[in-house]
Length: 239
Image (cartoon, rainbow, N blue to C red; front, side, top):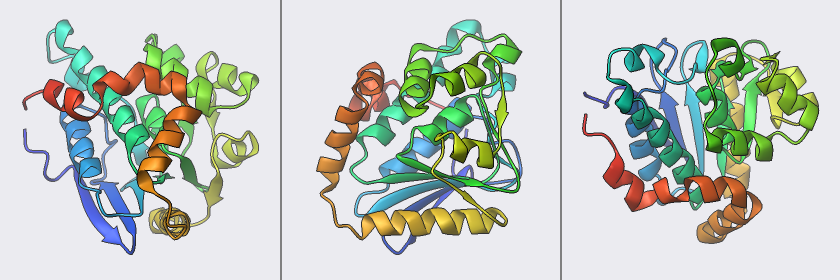
């Protein structure tokens, strides 16, 4: 499958900007996950990374339509590929910012929270862990990621066991995201790029940033590290 048109990469100053393209839901199929991982791997030399998306969705989670077309034993391809993507982001030698330009549900929500900080669109979109409504169990590293990145136990309960949909205002109030940006998609991306540019301007040693990140979230890193870098690359599906 051709992944070239699934996301774009551009440099804005010192910021490496990855954008999931198109007006769809940006469902995380093995092909899209591979495309994002390739885009993340193309970031050397940048001072910070921002991930954004076109349209009304940041990402609506795993591609369940794809899963229905393949044998059950291939379903782990999606989850394990995403585990590798989380590992890539945690090991990346630069600060990372998610520009949540629209709805971020299930694995899409986890993708946003796998970044160091998050800027969310104030006027549209929500964070939503849909698994309890969909009747789908969460995998171990999802649980650990939410445990580490959502600071309040009641908020984690509301997200995971009640399936609450959280607006930007509520997410900022509860400490799940860092900022809500007014305006459209371009405004949210601009706010995230500005935040990332400010971090890049600090001139930190990228390898130190990566090692501190792993130390800050050791339980998450412990569950994904074997799927990062060369080991994960070797395990990626051939599409």
